[in-house]
Image (cartoon, rainbow, N blue to C red; front, side):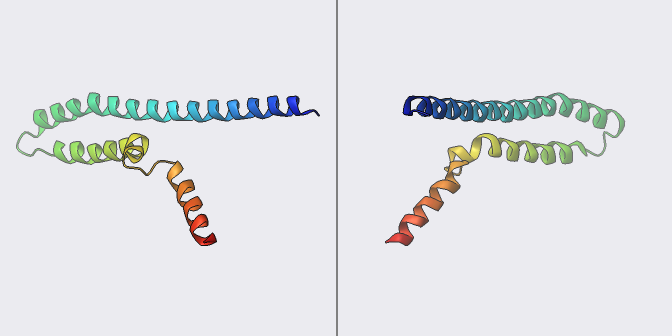
Length: 104
């Protein structure tokens, strides 16, 4: 196999890896927005049911805060860790940093 063919195959492989990574990222983002949309649609229904049938006890707050906490952690997993520097590449960067440090 000549060098040109080898470079072309490597470029194709790299491009395919990028595409798969991008596809996975889009799926993660879509999952978060779906989760958030369901939360926004179901929460008013839960509040309505609570206030209609048991208006003296507002148990809907447990659902709103519990599910809201779940939404927050889902957001953190999809977007937040990247913003605070703990994205998926963080682990690899730390490993390289420790390897360089150990070589000194």
